[in-house]
Length: 249
Image (spheres, rainbow, N blue to C red):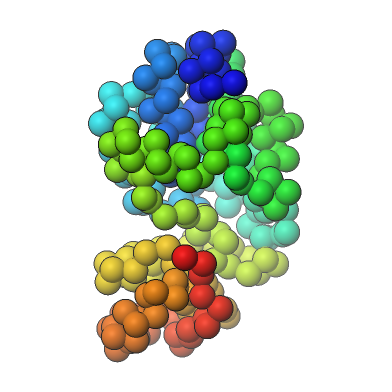
């Protein structure tokens, strides 16, 4: 099955939209296949501001419909406790929020951007998708991440080379309670490093210290900007650590 065939069979869909590579391409594909598609972005304390800005920018460039919803996931004591199944619990709330809004707007089918190369066995949120009947056209059509990036580039989408991004809550060790202050500190730290030219990196919280993880190719930049990083982060953390187990290129 091709995406065109999927949207021919499912001409009215609500898209769980993150502003990332996969859901951005899926919005483009649905829109250009002539489907009646509305993108739903759920704003939570776990998402950094730039993700919402990217979502708005792409929707504007495509002329697609976008609804921004809000969900206070931290109001759930279970999620705030940061258990191993936090992602599942959070996804249930996010998708439930989308389902309620989409249903009110007349959309019965919800789709998301899970692709064929995603390791669903290692993604607790996928269980929530299955329970809520959310379909993943990219996965169903056998379209992997590299293909999504290639097609996105050909389509002129600015998201084609956007780095993969996991929510801010993943920077806090499982079992350590999550609060808004920790999330805000993490976002400020990552915004700072992004401004220095780093891509596809993480600033993880270890106690009150920052543990920076970058690509191996960006280690020279990290050492070059070492003093800038220390000066920029020392007001947010008690110490700044470098993770020598670098991120994959």
